Image (tube, rainbow over all chains, first blue to last red):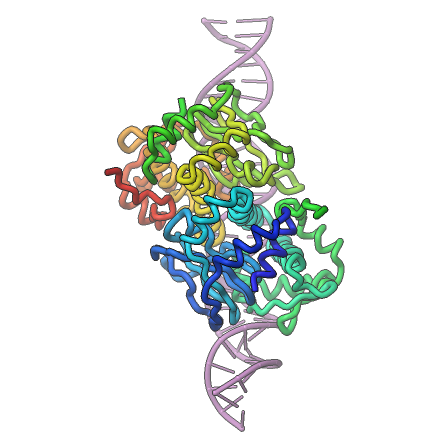
Length: 239
Length: 239
DNA sequence: CGCCCAATTGACTTAAATCAACAACGGTGG
DNA sequence: CCACCGTTGTTGATTTAAGTCAATTGGGCG
């Protein structure tokens, strides 16, 4: 059930069988939700955190005019609101972008983990800091990268992150997002995203059609995006 | 010494005398550094975290062309690289923007805290999640706010954050940054920041002259910025 | 089949960048 | 003490990347 989450953790550090068991034992109530469902509303008091088992979700904030900014995309295996364990309530919404399977982890269970499993606790803390690192990389994109580089960068990031949890096949992965969703990640309009997708396709870097991303030239794509995966903290080599 | 850090924590939660003592006991080697000194270089293995006692520092990332994006400003009382306790190395640089006083906190000491003080541990974890929350708000600025709103928003954020640690006097605070620094925070050019500062001044919202920010109309400024301090998590009311 | 949302494309506008010149400021050394 | 120099701040003219507006096509699904 939490296999993908374990894959994510083990790409960064070792997880002992006892720690694995502790994690398994705190997960409760698997449920399936449709696309475009608000899993968490900004400001709500939370007593459980949500682990994404399947599908894609995002964190989003919006401005009064109604435009939204997606601040992070979440893939299977991500703890979408582990932050709420220490923050109690969230400053942003969490929304499913595709149909999702999720499982709830009560904060009481997490508290037990923090008391009995210091190493696992640091690993969970690490996960939230990894989110912050991804946030910073997105800030760099939003603030300093051109629309083309920014778009390319997102495809690179997703390729690596989906690969970690076994959701990339060769140079291809499923991405059930609209160009509108992408625009809300990239701080662009969907019209402009469309043009950037065309350019990436014409330059034979990536193709995004029928909910599938196909990387045509990984090296060149990384170069255009100035993509360096260091910010994803993948240096762990299992013994 | 770590008074400002305690003020920051106590604006969010209670800190017991034992916890306070534990924090004091792990701080080592106060030192003073000049402006524009790289306190931490991206990628370096770290065994200590740095607490900022005085001055202003930032996290920054850069693109190949040399432009930099400041991803967070840090004020006195901030733990500038607590993230490194779980991440081991950082994905970004930490640089002093003014002369600073800093103190080192060895990770070994933090580890001891995580073993003996679960509540304080959660508070430290909270601090890193607060950074992530600030990152998200900046992403909203970079992606969806106009240059004017974005600039106004930064002045609002700093007013609140400096106020928490006693560094705002009435509607005024010291800000020893150049317009170039601001531009690097805001994802703009310094020329455009200059124009936005003029407009904010002419509209009698804020004034930034001679390293001093003077808020002329707090309500109107918040309105222009669409500033809502919820993301700074200040709801704690001490008993 | 038809409807609705997403994708696509072209024409045009605009916010911010760029370029350039100059003024103000602050620190340093003669 | 003040002249000099490099950095920062200021402003205007111009360019450009991305947004806006609008029309059309296309796909998936009830």
